[in-house]
Length: 239
Image 1 (spheres, rainbow, N blue to C red):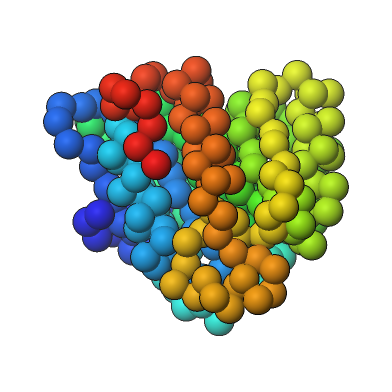
Image 2 (spheres, rainbow, N blue to C red; image 1 turned 30 degrees about the vertical axis):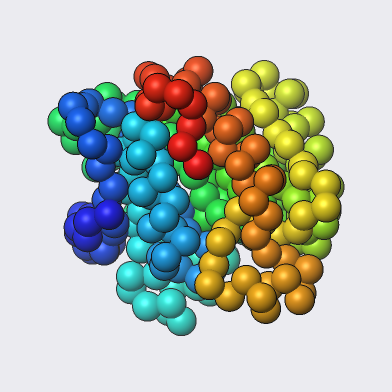
């Protein structure tokens, strides 16, 4: 990935951009990090998306300072999403959509905190949303009207999302939004984040699960192929 600067309404922020090899244009994907911020795991996710034919942009949602940002982000996530984080995310969407290397179709992927924001902005001009174990109180009745198609992944052992998957699926069904929601048995929160701190996470019942992660990304790429212009390299997803 290459470092870039994203011009947002509240001031510029840093971002990482991963570009596929070969000739574009490609569909775009905004990648939203978890509470640990942009690190090795998020950069690997961006690179994996690029390897599968997607122009991936990961904005640093903590660029203005983690201590300063997090309380406001939590309040924003719990409300209607009118704040600087939402504006940063929509600026990332606009940056991709206007890029000559992008087809104009843009999806969003988010993990934990980022997953909560991926759902929050799903009605705001994206073509597909793929939240992993989204954080925040699930006000699905309030935020999902007019949503883009959603492919969501939960862990059955996630204490932050008890019943979250079925609740999301019910609301999307009521709204007539195309969706694929799956709750993976035997895994908890953060199952798709291969962070360096895995030994500690596993002690707490969290942490990475390769099989669930591979299945989730296979579902996401199939979903994106339906709702975005084709993006995968021949031979199936490279996860």
